Length: 213
Image (tube, rainbow, N blue to C red):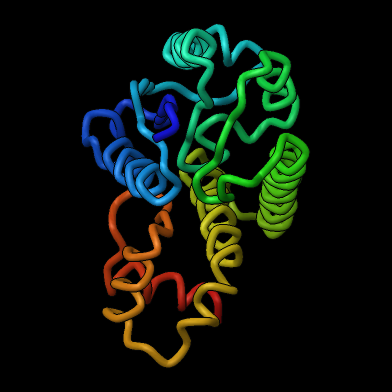
């Protein structure tokens, strides 16, 4: 079997303590490694935000994963591209280390060009969400609505939830006609991740379906 290094990350201490996000990523990586013939020699886990120009300096476990991968001449495998970063410049910087990165959800054949492309799309999506939130806040303010921190956060969370649901539209279209429980089972079998990293349930399926209407 081909050697590989696994890297997992969550952004918040709460997610780190719960273990749900990290455990879900580890499970997805294990399934991918088994299917593609990789042997995960080491797993590096981190609880740290992926934002900021100095993100790599603040992520010692990613640095350690890079070092281990170089020594073993092995790729680093992550469950999703955003576990590395949503910033295209950060992704480009990682590519300069000449260590292959494999994103499980994109497949083993995704080359560096594709990773750059997906990172650029993710960054664009984040900017669009930010702009929509700002526009919505401006409208609410013009209507005389008092805006506090909770209102700003709720609007941002709403837009992000809608964007995530829209990304899942093709998958949900394929499963159209099944019950919420059956869809949840299919999504878990396909290792499609949820926003929280926890398994799919009928409730989370119904929530996404509601946002897609």
